[in-house]
Image 1 (cartoon, rainbow, N blue to C red):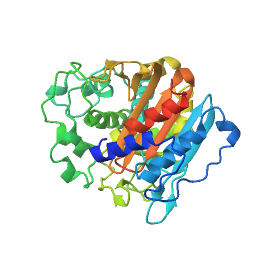
Image 2 (tube, one colour):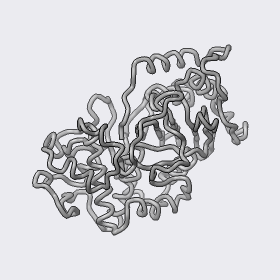
Image 3 (cartoon, rainbow, N blue to C red):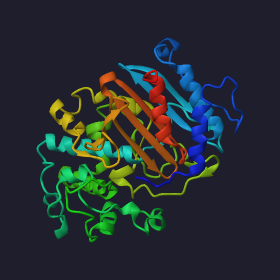
Image 4 (cartoon, helix red, strand yellow):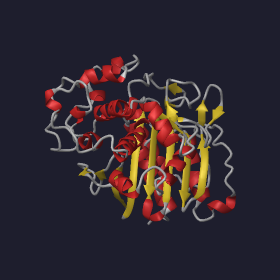
Length: 375
């Protein structure tokens, strides 16, 4: 889900933050407690410039440009796990590695995994038409396969781009009702013709998961992913109050969105620690045999205007500064998130922010540069 837009002023703040990372004199803009206490032993972070990374993130906090939690790990060893800024400004609650954040579109990788688990159970085939799994299927959808939904190549228009979306996002909407919003819309292009990001496709994937498994989307993920991986602080957000508060910017709370709407496209919450468990499991056969995992991470379709990047199933795959990267971001009112996996280096960078105008496109590459020594 993308419920926000970036602004030039915030972009310039991040540019300034990057330039000031190595300053010896700390800035005093918006002075607040900078971070929660990390329990990671100093010996574990000796292999990366952890103090430099910590200084960089604290600088962003003082600028009012970041609030959230970060975890960096390599070769199965946690190098940095820390919270920055406030989970709740009013209550003066700090972010920690255990703070729960809305994930936005990081949800899609769990939806995609659920689909492939069902394929491994011989309950569906991703190359089959979606109409095989839907009770009501418009004629225009006849050529659309599950593969098209997974890779954003279905041509189904993105309902969060509809003019009326902002005026309806605070009202509960069960999946069937959300599907009705785009079911009768003409396709943007013929299935498979090109790539265009569509939350609508992942809403349909969640609906297919429920019909094929005879379980709710939430229950299926809990049984087949979260419980086996001991992801005890991950789940479907029912507008609950034990998550970090989402902000547009410091002290300005984000607009309300009812979490029934993003559904399988963006309704999950998690912590950096739980996402690290997820990352580590993806190197194993704990959830799926390797050939199915390879299917998830295959470069199925090139992403326009992102040189060298392609879309897998719920993940972007490609190269970043010559390194293999498997990544996805998320954005939903009040939250910006990113998980970046570097499988050849067995490294992961997980960033969860409860500040809407966080420029993840600057922070994530900057952290990667510091982790890999600027190479």
